[in-house]
Length: 197
Image 1 (cartoon, rainbow, N blue to C red):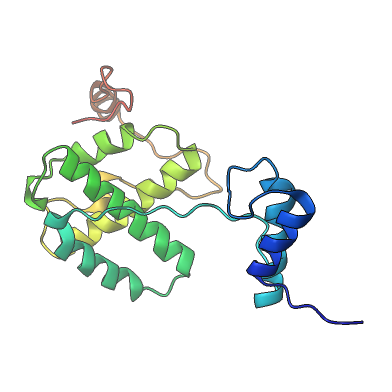
Image 2 (tube, rainbow, N blue to C red; image 1 turned 180 degrees about the vertical axis):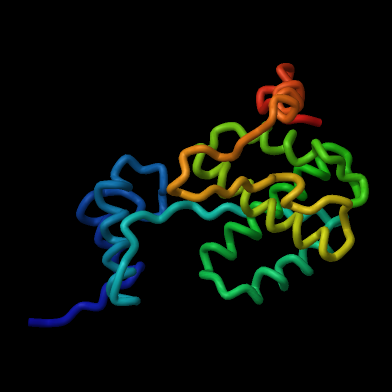
C-alpha cells in the first residue's frame, strides 16, 4: 500500500475533483462538513495533535500615547511566575483599559480620576460576570503597579478594596450605627454600580 502525504495542494485538488468546491472559499457551505476535518487532519499530521476549535485571533491596538507605559507593563508581567494564558489576560485587560482611556480623552496617566476605572467597568457590556471579575483583578494589579511607579495617585487596593473574612465566621465584621450610616449614605443610587465617588 502506497503512503500519501497530506498536503494542502493535494486537498485542494481532492475537494475540487470529488466534491466540486474551492478549498480556499471559506464561505462555502461545505466548509464545516469537509474543509474543517481536512484542516484538523493536516494539523494532526504536522504536529501530532490538534485543537478541537480554532477561535479567530483578535488584535488590540496599543494607543501610541501609552506605548512606553504599555511596554514597561509587559516587561513587568513577563517577569511574573505565572502561566502564559494568565500573562496574556493581564496584558489584554491593561491594553483594553488604555484604549478606553484614549477614547475618553484621558491622554496622560496623571489625568486618571478615581471614578475612571469604575466607569470603564460599567461600560463592559457582553462579558460574563466571571470575566468582569478577572478584568477587575487584573486592573487592581495594574493600578498597584502604576501606583508603585508613581504614575497615578491611587493604588489598586484603593480602587478595588478587597474584603477578607475568616471562612468559618459568617459575620463579616461588627459595625457601629455611625459606621453603618456612613456606608449606607455613601451608596450612589444614580449609578448602576452604586459606587461612591
